[in-house]
Length: 555
Image 1: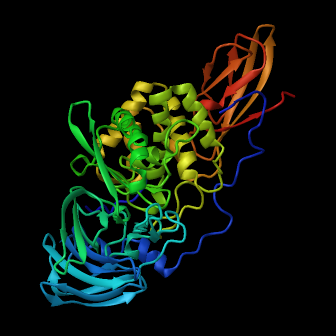
Image 2: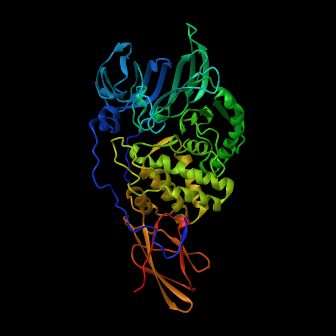
């Protein structure tokens, strides 16, 4: 599946300034990107000319040598006529051959990119495939999943001390270990993964389990999995050790049964059976807000890993050692599973727009809180997220260069942005219906920022574009400035305005005077006046919106 379009489109405080001033909207110095950054991040003609429809990845994993070798068959549809195409594989990995129709193809390497010259003209609409055989010692992760790569460990919880091999590669790229078009815009429609591992070990990958069989020499076991849906390249994974397996089912609201499969270290089976019960509560909540689990045919899996966690599609990596947070749920289960809906199902086309993955998923944690513990406790949870917002860089980064995010604002600021939009819409039924429609109608598709913004504007009937513009494209928060003047013994005059970078920013806010009821005021970027029949101190409700507050003394 190929998409080439790009984006166009708290605490209650009284007379307190949350921030001394507006932060800069961008970093002081322009970023510099390399030729390799552009090769990886841009949609060059050698990439846009073809649309991947299927990957058939087959490899052997040798834990003793920390080595892999195998092949990937790439099936594609010709979008534009070409004789030269780009595929990606890290430079430290050896290409042994590239063939089409059993005939060798010539190629040159440019760092981590491979440029292949075709023997025959590739006409628009034709379906072709090529086979790349390769081998090598893939990059080893220093700190998975943040610094990605292979993790080669041992399961020290049993006397067998079995090898424990996993991989996570979201930021660094799937091409660190297998050849593919390593760009978010192009997902295969489906995929097969065959993995051969030493006898006695299990290999758990994405999709639905197909078969397990010994190799001809009896020294290895070949595990085959099939992914029936589009999948991000970085979501493709391997999890290898002497896993224990148990299963359960989740019943959807329409009565359909979803397979739940859990692969854990043998020593952890009993506590996993208890701890993973929260999965069904989570799936029920997410079904309410986002529709049914989007990869139903492949099932849902949690797979124990030696690193914290990762949203590998239908095979979520779990390494949180069976701990709940102070709010009573396992963060890794709830967050990484939220990515099944946002990130895995609804995906962005460029790393610059990763807010689409992380903001909605981090917000899903708050929705889970509200499903299970109610809105007041959810506000408590959101306050913990708010403390982590930095406001140093815009949430949308530079396009076409595969740049990493500089901070975590796409998580926590993104979550608060969506929380703010909920109250800007002013009607929970409308907001949640729009959110669910986004997840369901854009299910298993690649989207841009503009598509998301326009969709939510259309579904809510509210012009949310200035708000999205402020939170996504500028580092600074909007600031509500206000001043209070007592007009009479029982009436206050509140002058107010928004100081914001985005034109047309007009977020409504709640205020109250003394111990009175909350009242909604609607500041614009011009000074306007609201009169309130009450006297006392003015409090601005920052629990329902992400903004600074500045009280200005009346001269």
